[in-house]
Image 1: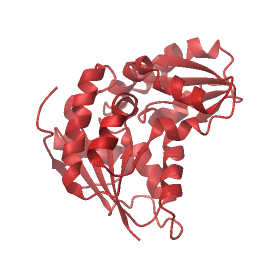
Image 2: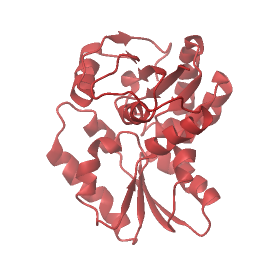
Image 3: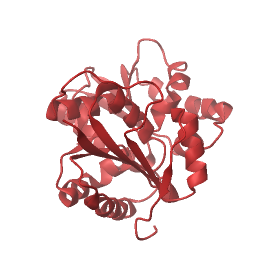
Image 4: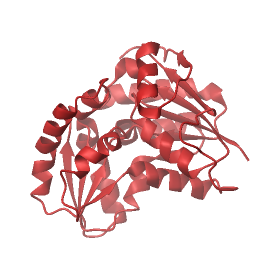
Length: 264
């Protein structure tokens, strides 16, 4: 059985979710929406994020989805209720999915400012794990830097040191990459962390939740560079997004320009 899935993010962060999906699942058709016109979401206020969520829901309504994969942690944290209510299809989110995978009593979350301010990760993890300490670190400059092409590795390294220092003083055991963009710089972060600290990518937990809901009929048939079953949509600058798709996914694909009705 083939299922039709929507994935959305403010930009390229959702590529981490897309890769996890294709590595773990066969029989899927995917519509990927990148709201690049309003990227980044992470420094917007809650009201703005909820308006954007309503517009995204409206855009996906005509796409006959079987489920939605919420690749944007900020929208997940601030507007999950809107997405679930408006679309009326199963919606899989990063925060609830990964909270069930926490196994230690001292956890850190790297996230955008809006996600941190929502306390969504902290509250959700504490609802699943008893006696857990959750430390949050806002990383406001990560997404704008990761979205740049080419990537400025020197700048990312510097920011990593700045953002990791406060939480490394907390004797943490696990660190959650609480923005879908952050796994794209996994190796940089890994090299700055002690080997005993486990790095958790929420996209893996979310795809496991999807597979539990929609039982798989076989092993994934994904091969590196095969995205024939994926349609890409962006809200601005097709050429720039096409370059990012080629850089991060290694493919050349038709990119469709769309409008989400209003600007924020």
